[in-house]
Amino acid sequence: MSTPHNRAQNGDFAKTVLMPGDPLRAQFIAQTFLQDPRLVTDVRGMLGYTGTYEGRPVSVMGSGMGMPSIGIYSYELYTQYGVENIIRIGSAGSYTDKARLFDVVLATAAYSESSFALTQSGDTADLQYPSQTLNDALRKSAADQGVPLIEGVIHSSDVFYREPSDAKPVYWQRLREEKGCLAVEMESFALFHNARVLGKNAACLLTISDSFVSPEITTPEQRQTSFTAMMKVALGAVL
Image (cartoon, rainbow, N blue to C red; front, side, top):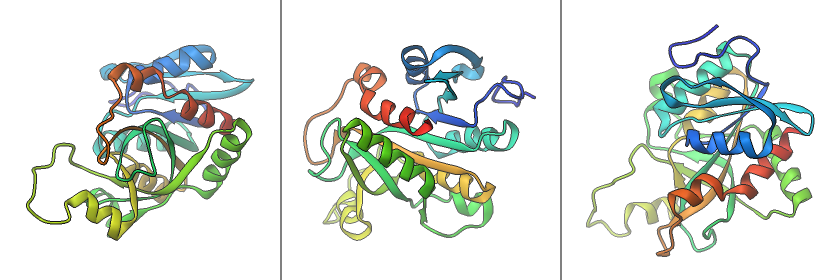
């Protein structure tokens, strides 16, 4: 049964979905790593594919940018398509020199000032948590492949362009010091919340694409096709 945002039919999605923000990254993963990938949805250009990885069914679909977008897509996958596990694979801006360009971060919690959880279910918590089962599978996959993981709390922000403030320390430094945030992205808080209220599983792997403490930055092409270590770790967890 299709939804207003997804034309896939029942059975088109596997139980586990890898979810990058960029639909072109979803296309790259499907065409590079999956056997016999087939396009199951393309509504609004949000591409979703299903295939197999080493014989196991797996799907990959874009989420778009921000909590409202991933909130819609993940909710529908969980409630309408029988999906049990969503692994977000995204990019993040580092708040610390401990997480450098192309490092892979495993989120142990997502902090946010967002009202997403409050509005969605009345939840006032400012921390949402991933599935420990999925995180353990990702740890094992990373260890098996020799990919180092940096673990910690991430900041899920509703705002990409924040007006400068005269306050010292600046906002991101306060989050690093007071909340322990390693890096910033824009989706995981909503994904973790949806999974919790629906009794499903969610996790998040991030590749550092830029930094607040270093001038280095990745290109759009690199973000689309070069975060392969993160992709392989996520795919390995499906096994």
